Length: 260
Image 1: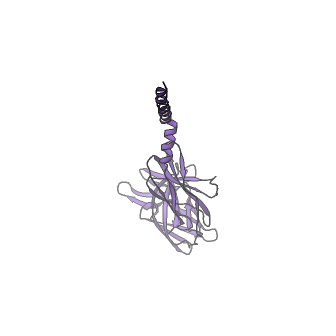
Image 2: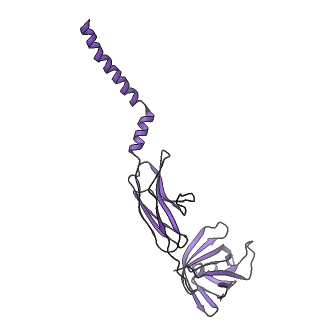
Image 3: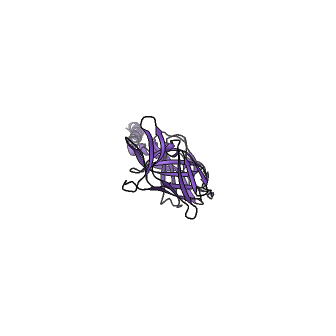
């Protein structure tokens, strides 16, 4: 009887041990939590620097993109990121983007992020950058122009224009990327450019002359297009205008131009 009793004790201990192991392995939440922790990527900022007064380049690395459904950067003017804006980029182990339309001499706080398929967000450490002082320009020069659809506000083509100034006369070449020159006047005291309506901006191969027609907010035709020039940063924006030909119109726009 004593020998049998001694034999049964190790068996019972072994059975209890196997039961305990079995219960722990069967706990899915515990297993999933350990798996998620082991597969959490590390996100690290690798660069953040201003390019000029209005743009900056930021970069980061992600140790693995397994399980990452979205990645990008959070950018804010507040160090607590309460006013943060997300810049989404394509998933990769090395990510970067150019921040645009920034304010001059302004500090921005940046951190990279990876959004995981299980709903978790992983962030890098935060860093900061400060934009440079905006240069001042004369009106004459070369500009990058972007047309914006007056109805949707969406960009509808970017191209290069040149501005010539002779006294109060202003010549703008390649409006609407059409290769033509429109003529207006410049009031240096108010820094306002005025462009009389119905000037040719494009000769279309099928529809002939296309005119730049001034319109107001209700799309009614008016006499002139106006532009306010800002020397600091070299920028001006037109009032509304329409690209019109004899057969109809191509679109209604406003145009923004930035000095190169």
